[in-house]
Image 1 (tube, rainbow, N blue to C red):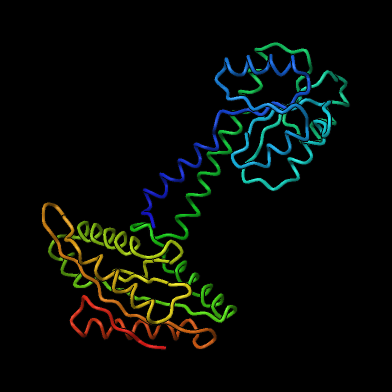
Image 2: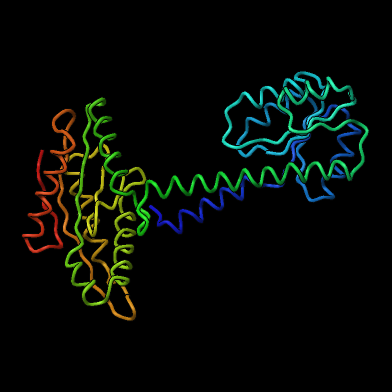
Length: 322
């Protein structure tokens, strides 16, 4: 589980991959393929070649397929306009910019190519400068698309995650709980639930200030997330409380996870402004079998178990059975 800055850095990396400088050239004329390869390589593009439309279509099904395409109109297998139609009909996470090239120059041909899904149209023969200029237009559009995708993904992340810790926010982790309980009902399985409270957190804020408290909360979140499974769900439930949803875990497995979390959080002090702050958590543990409890009842059991753990001296777990 990553914090927000780490997650957004990862997202930025994914966006940069979408902006790779590769071009797919689908052209059946070997001489023209060679010319385009030389020109595009000189301009810094990584060139992928297809000798016919069928090969090009297969290449476009692969992961990280190019977003900038130069397609010949007349090709064996699948011609340029038909390839355009297939590309536009296919569901793709990102837009592919298509430059259709052909010896046809009638106005109706231009209309046919554009209506098939091409973004631009270039008539053979053409010179280097014209091709380069049109590719720059395509790159500007693809860069704008990448910016829009990046903004959308960041907004989506911020809508579902806690702004401080990067964990799932309250509404999202409760959605995960409902989903996993529904899955357990269908599969006759279990759902484990942990409710955690950071011990004496008010004292941390009062002694070191709220910025120090934020540091402690983020460190606690990272330690919790470091010892759960990749498919468990860790969320900030509110304030200094956290919720952990454990798909497929019965009460024993949930208790083991809680013990690991307790140990991980208490393992080392947190350094805040040169001061070592010891942190611990109290954990309420519960689980339910398929079709035995509703969501609010399971939460109430976890909350009652958490109250017992705090009453028992904190830095421990308390278990509320099935």
